[in-house]
Length: 203
Image 1 (cartoon, rainbow, N blue to C red):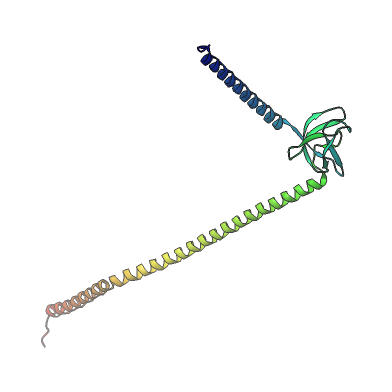
Image 2 (image 1 turned 180 degrees about the horizontal axis):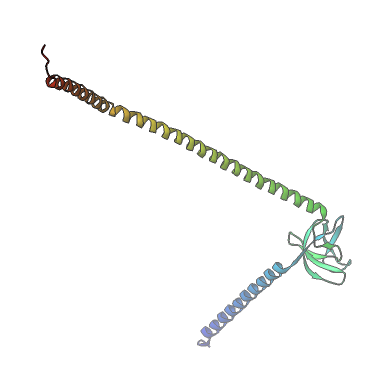
């Protein structure tokens, strides 16, 4: 009896672990099934100008859980002969009479959605317009900078030419003076040579 107690305890622990694993696997499987069902579930809206009772079962004899009205979005879980099993947006599920669901939102809700889309598109347009104006301003600024740089380059070019001409002015004066002196010396030499070579006539 003493030797079998540890073995019995081990077996009980093993069974508890096996049961826990089985429950964990079952919970995971159930979660996956629910997620798959939610992903593939059909959605619909309650038709306009209606208020329907949400019941615990497919019939008027079942207890009322809540009420759904026009524009409420529900998820279809099951369809019976004249009843539809749905889940509300807050998670509560029940049965409503069939034939009062529409795959498209009611006009009032659609109008609200369209107004929201218009507001969103208007905001996007304003953003694009602001970006365009900013780009235009940047282009004008760049063009102005280009004009200023071109003007500055022209001014620097003229200044460089003026400075270059000023630096060469003494050279031009020296060259002109040398030419003038050469011409004067040449003229004097020519006159002197002419006088020496002219014959004298005596009377």
